[in-house]
Amino acid sequence: MIEVYTEEINGVWFGVASDQKGVYATTFARNGEKALYKLLKAIPYNAIFKSSVKPSDIAKQIISTLKDIYSGFDASPNIHLHMDHLSNYTKKVLHMVLRIPAGYVSSYGLIATAVGGGARAVGRVVASNPFILLVPCHRVVTSNLSIGGYSEGAKTKLEILTREKRGYSEEREILTDFGKMKVFPVEFVLSKCDKGKVKDKR
Image (cartoon, rainbow, N blue to C red; front, side, top):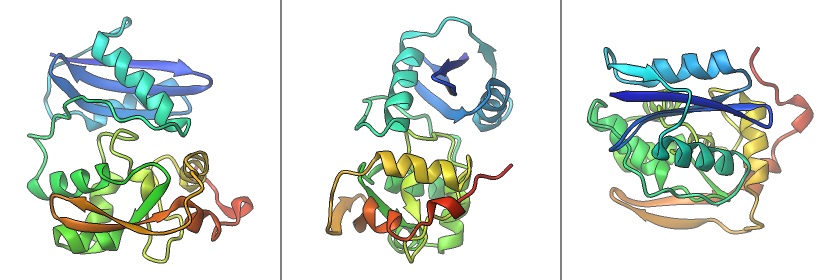
């Protein structure tokens, strides 16, 4: 059975849906009701679940990891992500996004070039990413390296990317299961943004 758990840490609610074998969904939001809603929306249709007050060991580990990623720290938990219920294309895109390291971004178009389809198709997958933060969709931006969209709003995306600055100055290529993917320092995106004009959706 899937266990659903949410926890508030420093004004942010983090959530995880998991069982003893791995994770079905993660999320975060500014209020508990929204976090729970997003979490339930992301788990497999008709899945049996229970809401838990006390987290399992896996849930506790994932909540800690979500907090670390949100705060800009490097975190790569060795945990299984349940993807069997997702389409093959969705799995390909998510695996590509997983390969983008902290301090870097890639684009919808570059991911599309690697896995097939168009940038919009990649955008739809990224927008419905069930593993928010664990699969770092906040590191996917537009082809001209402007901020792009995000489920929690562009301002929140910009804040997370700002915390992930590592001082890198050059683009590089990383190897993936689908070939090479070019990634760019976060600083390239931040230099294009007028922080006062980047707003979250209400």
